[in-house]
Structure formats: C-alpha cells, structure tokens
Length: 165
Image 1: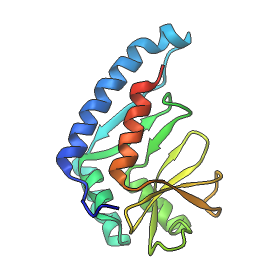
Image 2: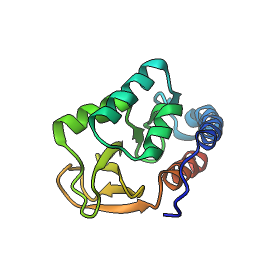
Image 3: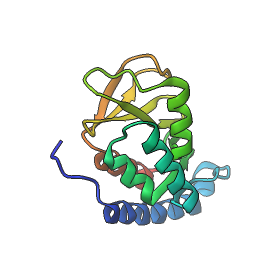
C-alpha cells in the first residue's frame, strides 16, 4: 500500500460518478435484459449512519479508510451489477463483527467484513488497508487479496457499474 489515506472528497467524487453510471444502467436495464431492475443505490451517510460508524469504531479498531468511507457513504445495494455487490452499513458491519468476530486473515491484526457479493463471498479490510475476498461463501474459509486499498476496491466497483450492459 502506498501509505496514502482515502480522502472524503475522493469518496464523494466516486459516489457522484457511481450515481451517474447507475442512472444510465437503470434507464437501459429493461430494454437490455427484458425485465425491470431491482433497486440499485449507493446511499450517502446520514446522522444515524455517522452514529453507527462511531459505535463501530468503539467496538473494534477499524482501518481509517473504512471510517472515511462510512463518513461519506452509509451503504450500497447493487443487486444488478454483475452477480450483485453490497457495501454493508456500519450497523450491519458491527452486528456481523459481534456475531462472527474478525475475518480470519493471517497477518492482519483485525480484518473487518464490510461488504459482500451476490454469491455470498465476503469482502474484508484489514489493518494493512488491503481488501480481501473470501474464497467461498463462508466466514471461516480462506481470503485472498483483491485490492491493495479501499480506493482501489471502489475504483474496481465503479468500473463494474459503468461497464454493466
């Protein structure tokens, strides 16, 4: 990792681009696929999600990039992007942490699950800042690196939204 931290301004810019791409996707979805899309949205943070982020920080040490993300975006539900992508709300991430604990990733002090895909694979961010994906739809199996940073993960997700037919 380069050592650069995720900036709130960058996340807001990413949200604007993702929102514009989602608008285009929703307009072309029915003609392309022959059925209506589900509700696809990246939601901006609210006072409630800020409180949930603070509670998550109190529960466990989380990477600062994830805190920055949650200060701008509360969650995302993208069921029609590939097989689906979901950035969990800070309240959901906290509930999962209480129930399952940290993701079992060697070399990471704490790895917090913050997202999933439509196939049940989990995404976790470790204290290194790297983003990991479970190799199966399980909290207990191996995880592999999919992005060197949360910013790279969001860039990948943004390209998937924009490239969705």
